[in-house]
Image (cartoon, rainbow, N blue to C red):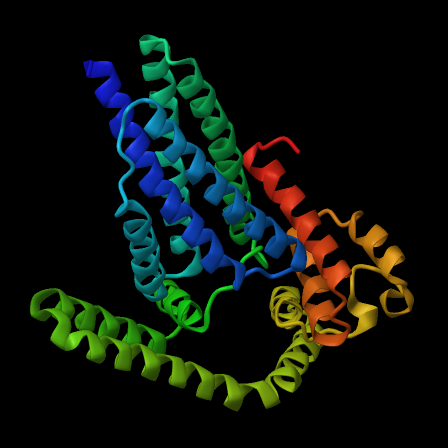
Length: 324
């Protein structure tokens, strides 16, 4: 076996392992999809990853390598561990880790392409080119999803309940949250030093943080609308435009708006087709967020929500310089 051939085999094995992990992660993301369109895309991504895994394994055999029967198991285990540990991180951190995996797959596929060129392995080169194209597309998709979140969302993927808590902790929104952040950090540090024994303690802290968040939310929801509207009224009366704007923005972000406050006139009277057409004319993430929040709270029409998500994705692509 030549040195080039050995390198090709090693890269094919590594790609098989990482692709198995990629497939499993895509399948875990399906349950987090905000819309049916995103759910279909994630399902297709997972199926495509599974097909690529088979192609890589077949090519590995063709160049004289022995498929690693442990690889699929390790791939699934890696994905399961990632899904477990990322519950302690915000959704944007989890997506950044997904992006890191895709970049590694892209870089290895590019390296494999050069190795195949050098060794004169035409079929390996063709496979590598296919992998490069696939991972470039996934990198672009994840970049856009992250840009949607950076623009204020709602992102294509919804945070799990624990990730919502983790995200709130990471942002340090208020004193109680900062307290829980310190508690979680201390628990994690203890886990590192004491091992498995303290894992239950970490879970308990996370559960308590989630319970606290739910309790605060239930307590505040009833009076939230009246308080924000009253604050907006008083601020307008006193001529404090900044405070009035902040109160209104808070209501809009929470979906607490009436139809006549939406950036689309006569929204409640629009058919699905007309609503979708109007949404395509929205030019700011804020206006799209307001419409999505209202739609989800009052009508919950899947096609309309998907159209709004698509429009937000278009703005996100523009923000990161990705061509449509």
